[in-house]
Amino acid sequence: MSQTAAVLSLTRKNKVGLVLAGILGLLDLSNVFMIPAEDSDTPGPPTAVFVATAVLGLITVIAVVYTWRTADRSGSRAVAGSRTLSVIIALPAFFTDGIEAGAMLSVSVFVIVSVVVIALVLSRPAPPAAQ
Image 1 (cartoon, rainbow, N blue to C red):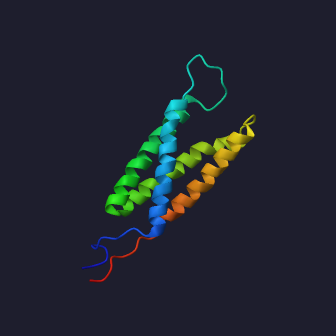
Image 2: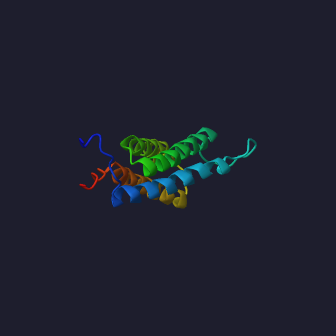
Image 3: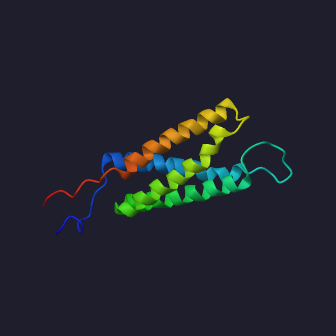
């Protein structure tokens, strides 16, 4: 049996990355509950940003479950892609005036953890043990 036909297993790095990605995905999903009311004058991101991050969170969670169950690399790539897009959406916070220090800190931690997640999820899975 060739290695391409063999089922690959997830390494500890992959599993840690998937758990962290799942947590980030669930946090992104919770953004739906932070959408300001239409008549609200509170400063913050537009509604489209909240919706986009929630959709990316849903994609991440689905891809995490798929990857965990199948160890398929396409699922890992979907996780990495959705996390990358989520980071890109968060980047304007670094260039916008008037962002509170706490919000800036949380965005910074989010970006750092996301980069770590992407590296862990995309690390090569282990080949199956010889029989």
